Image (cartoon, rainbow, N blue to C red; front, side, top):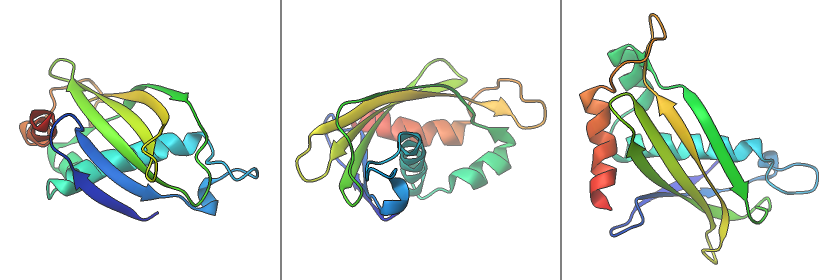
Length: 149
């Protein structure tokens, strides 16, 4: 999947562009609904890349995981295979151990909203899977996006 990054000022938060392909679609040519969460996950990873960091390396170095504990999406219009889309992320900390990523999927050509929702992530220790504080380095990466709003 091809993507391009855009950091926009004002209230756009973090935005990334993706091209969709046949492999993303169901037999009707519509992007299959679980792929929305995969694309949202890729957008989160691109947020770290835009900061010059590798998310997986940060997880290993800090001995943590960032599992998803809640996910919600409301689909407004279909994404047809071959369409370019943009995903806007708006991260919000919910205490010291949790971050919620609100997201919006937009048609790249028309800017029409296609879907919106959120994913809630909790930081856990990789040795015992118990909730732990989000490491400072990871928190700072996310805070830079929040401060751009």
